[in-house]
Length: 177
Image 1 (cartoon, rainbow, N blue to C red):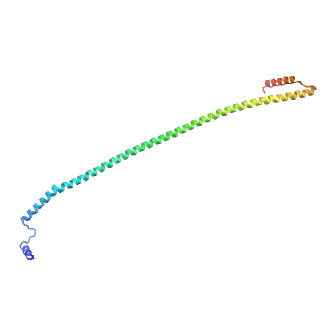
Image 2: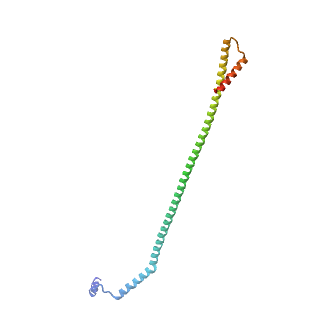
Image 3: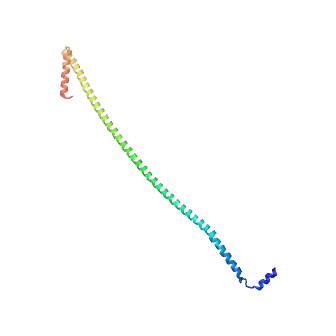
């Protein structure tokens, strides 16, 4: 065969020159392959590409929905946080006002109690002073009566002594002591 190949090559020196039946066969094979690819393979490829496109679009939409929900959740959280802060501030303000009110009430009650104690103490002091003055007057009168009795060399009877005590007390009351 090698010799016949060489002879055929010698007879046909142009390798680009072909016979018409080879070109027709190549054209038929090309058309059949293209038709097969167009009818069977191309729809599968386009369907796969369309499915992939739909999947990507669905994931993008899901991501946008998730982002929207996240931003809504964040807004709700910030709103509830602001409300909680406001409520805490209000509670603190109310507690301060209540503490101030209780402090004022306690201060007023203490001042009233102190004023009452002072009034009672003044009344007690005044009463004790009057009792002490009366006691001093009584002792002074008795002493004066005893001295007068010694001076007069006679004894003063209890009626005289009571009369002298009453006169002394009236004189002291009149003097404003």
